[in-house]
Every structure is written in C-alpha cells, then in structure tokens.
Amino acid sequence: MTKYPYDIKISIVVPVYNSEIILPELLAQISNALSGQLYEVILVNDGSADNSWDVIISLSKKYDKVIGICLARNFGQDNAIMAGLNNTRGEYIVIMDDDLQHSPYDISKLVAKCESGYDVCYAKYYGKKQQAWWKNVGSYINAKQAEFLIGKPSEIYLSPFKVIRRVIINSIINYQGSYPYVDGLIFSATRSIAQVEVEHNKRFASKSNYTLKKSISVFLRHTTGFSIVPLRIASLFGILVAFIGLILSLYYAAMYFRGNIVEGWTTLVLLQLIMGGAILMALGIIGEYIGRIYLVANKRPQFVVRKILL
Image (spheres, rainbow, N blue to C red):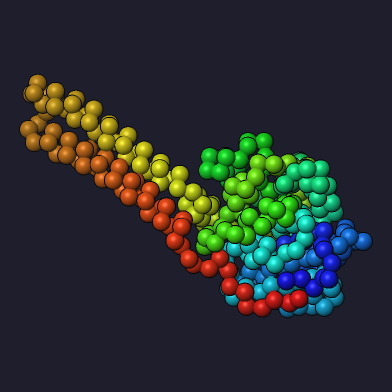
C-alpha cells in the first residue's frame, strides 16, 4: 500500500502518541537527512489524546512521502509498529520513536551497516542516555529479560531505534498474536545482528508518554506474551517446593518419633508442605499446556486501522 510507482529503499515506521508539537520538526529533519533518497514515512497514530492525527493529515499534504495510519484506539507501541510494518514497501525498514531522541541523521549509518551484510542493525547509545534514571534501570532489566527469554547476546543493546531488512520484516508480519514483541520476533527470525553507536538526544518537546506504570505493563506483556519460560519456572518451582516438602517431612517425622514435637503439629505441617508443593507443580504443568494453547489460539486483533492516508 504505497503511493510510489517505483521501489523504495527506506521505509520509516514511527509510532505516534501525543506528539503533535514534535511531528513537524521530526518530518523536517527526516526530509533533510534523506534528501535525494527514495523513502517513505509511515506515521501510526496510536490513539493519541491530542491533535496528533490532525498534524499527520497536514504533514501528509505537505510531504508526498508521508503515509498516515490512524488506529481505532491505543493498542500499545509494539502493536502500532506492527500496523506500520504491514504497510511498508522499503528494502530497509527503520523503526524509531516520535520524540527526536533518535536522530534522523543517524538513519544512514544504520542502513549502511545492514547493507554490509547484516539483517538487523540496532542503535547503541554512547554517553549518558537523556532520560529518567528509572528508565535506564528498566532498560537494563529489559536487556537481561531478553537474554533469558529470547537468547539476546549480552553485547547487543535492544534499542527502539533500528533498521531491519525486508526479508526479516516479511517474517515478522506473519505473526498473528495479540501481543507482539518486535525484538522477540527479530531474534526468532535471525541472528545476523549488528549495532552502531549513536547519540541519545534529549526529548524535543513536552514530557515522555512512558510512565513507570506503562513501562511495567510493557515488561509484563513481553514476559508473558511471547514466552512460556515463566510457566516453566513455575513448574520447576513447584517441583522444588515438593522436594523440600519431602525432605522436611522426613526430618519432622524423625523428630516426632523422638518425641520432640507437639502431637498433631507434625501432621499439619507435613500435609501443608506436600500438598502445597504438589498444587504448585500441578498448576505449573497445567499452565504449560495453557500457555501453548494461548500462544497458538489467541485471535484478538493486533490493531484495528480506522483510517489510512496514502
């Protein structure tokens, strides 16, 4: 779904949420940074409460390379990105935020790295990131989570600013789950991944739309929506508790026969330990099956598009 009669080299997907003040400057910088290149910009309005959609309409009239997508409600950043990816036609697809903390002038660096033979190139920030301290802590936790759940190499930084080859995008958009995790889908498709150091800029205007509550929500969605590892942990925890219960059962039984414990107390403790461990183990096993069913059968839409400006 593109307005160009020729192939496009670069598609830029930008999820937009309450950024009416920033968007004009973002498009001006993209236009300057990619002057003379074949590109398109897909602005996905993710249920903004301000006038972001009206600004996107205006920008689509000013720049013939802008495509606007308006979602029916706020679906979340990864879902908005998926909506944009489904409407790209570029050979290299850029994903970046709408706040100008990711400089459009760095796009060419990331694309050049992919052109050298890599499927994906992440931006890695040098110096201090221009954001709240708790976001830096969240980034660290997210990185460790990704190492554990999706096998991310420790040296790769999962930046929201990245470039992906078309062949990988074609694989990613085949995912139909309700709660996509773009980085997880990337690592499911390829291990040919590089990174380029860039500067992390201050937000151009207004405050960040990401609150601590929203960040925690995203973390939990990524943890439970893309992997059944937590369920396996629950199963192992149940087995461990059951094993500890068995050891303690033997210990308390020995103490009982020595007459060192009040009568009746041992029986209650043993029953609680054994039954509690067994219940946790059973729930973990049941959860394993439910998790597999969930990953396959969840048919909730990733996004609902209300309007598209071509």
